[in-house]
Structures are given as C-alpha cells and as structure tokens.
Length: 222
Ligand SMILES: C[S@@+](CC[C@H](N)C(=O)[O-])C[C@H]1O[C@@H](n2cnc3c(N)ncnc32)[C@H](O)[C@@H]1O
Image (cartoon, rainbow, N blue to C red; front, side, top):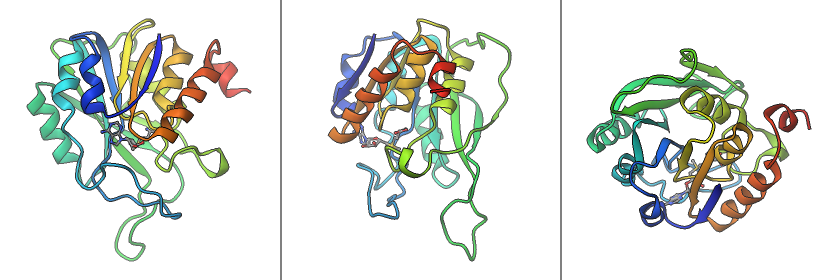
C-alpha cells in the first residue's frame, strides 16, 4: 500500500493507527525562511515546524524510529522536540550532498552537508549490518528537480534499507515531491505520506506511481 494524502500533516496523521509505523522518515520545514533563487518559498517555514512530533511518536512502533532532516543552526529545536515527544536520540547521519551551497560567501564555509537526527522508540537493533553515519549522494540539480529542497531518492533508499525490513510501514508527514515514497516503492516498504501543497502532492503521486514494479537498479538505469 502506497498512499499520499494532500493535506495538513497535523490533521492527516491522526488517521494513522497507533504503533503501526516502523519508521517516520521526514524532511520538515526547517524554519529558516527558505527562498529559492527563483523566489519559491516553503509553507510553514517561518520557524522550526515541530508540532507533529507527538503524533510521530504515537504512530511509531516500539522498536522503530525516526529520521528527521535538520540543519546545523536549527538542529537543537528539533532535538528537543524529538526527545520531548518520547524518542531517544541515538545519533546523527550526515548527508554529503556534493557541490557548493548557498549562504554568506564572505563569512560562512560553503555548506556541503545536511544533518539527519536518528532517534528510536524503545529497544531497537539495525536489521542488517551497522550503517555508516556519512552518506554521500549528489543533490538533485537542474531540470530534473521537482521541488526546491528535493532530497535524492538514493539517499532516502539508503536510509530506509538501513533501518527497516521489506513490508514495514514508513511514514513521511512532509513528502514534498515524493523522494521517500519512491524509495519505499523501490525497496518494497509500505508508505503513507502527507503534503500540504497541492502541486507537490500531485507530483509525488505521479513519481510514486511511475516507480511501481521497478527495482532499485531498474529505476536508476532507466
Ligand atoms: C523540506 S520540504 C520536503 C521536500 C521533500 N523531502 C522532497 O524531497 O521533495 C517540506 C515540505 O513540507 C510541506 N509542508 C509544510 N507544512 C506542511 C503541513 N502542515 N503538512 C504537510 N506538509 C507540509 C511543504 O509544502 C514542503 O513541500
């Protein structure tokens, strides 16, 4: 079952049964007032959007976990929210996205990475070998991009493979254009996602449907 619902995660997550998901994998609005070079903004990005965290904990199975994207300057807000909801922070994953980043060219090191908090609910053990805390995958670029802060399917795939088993349910409250949903489809995981913005939700549905029946290699060797 792959399901992408257009709407507010704060409401739509209520329909997800308690303790049904093995993993909440999500890239929420960071709260940094992001604006792309073409002026596109992210909804609810005025301050760290953390208000869904208790529902994330409710729907997570004991023995499951959460992978929550964040950034160096707002990571503390997300850490506090993850812990306050009842998860135990275990470690961080660093996504090396390659290339040069934006920001103040005179004072800041050019940002080449993003951070992902990893936290668990109760007793957890990785299903396969112990994964590394650094994942290097280039960020989507140019006309292949479908969302201003799109994450690569390959990155989502590696995170899902490291923390879940085939058939597990993965939930993404902030699906954007569906990288997490596509990765679940390729790896045989069930997916439930929500997305507030109608045009991104439509694109996510299209991308998830296009990946149906494909393996990882089929998808990347198209
Ligand atoms: C950082 S982006 C996620 C991008 C996604 N990882 C991708 O690869 O396309 C955050 C997304 O959360 C959505 N969003 C903001 N507030 C929301 C809410 N209350 N419920 C559901 N989605 C929301 C935004 O429209 C945006 O697409």
